[in-house]
Image (cartoon, rainbow, N blue to C red; front, side, top):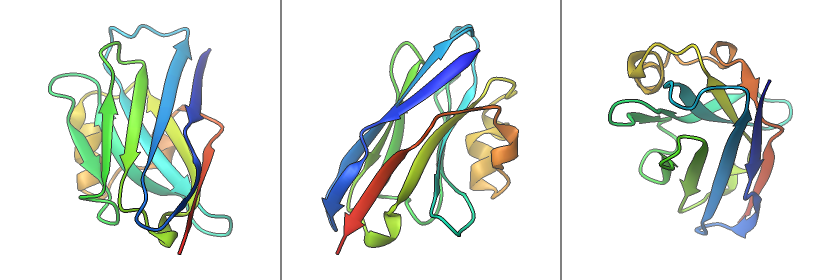
Length: 138
């Protein structure tokens, strides 16, 4: 069984920054490449994919238009901890943020590439964390 644990959420004023972390542990082989994505959701609204990274190759990344240029996704050398650095935060960034992993991903085309094409879906991910709340006040 695989576990994903998010941390780093909190309350900030507009224009501020936060860095979220996602630690992946459990029964999986980190030597295999996989897709990790950050999603966010506000109660009563659809879940939105924010960013994705494929652990193999060059670590190709993708971003939703709403966060492009403000958020950066990254991974550590062990490919088991992932970060979402969020800058220039806006009140509309307020949401519960989740990280998710797809260990069956076949490459960046199906991960960050899919996000850039608007085709990355939460249903592709089989492992999810519990979420961390981000609140941005104006």
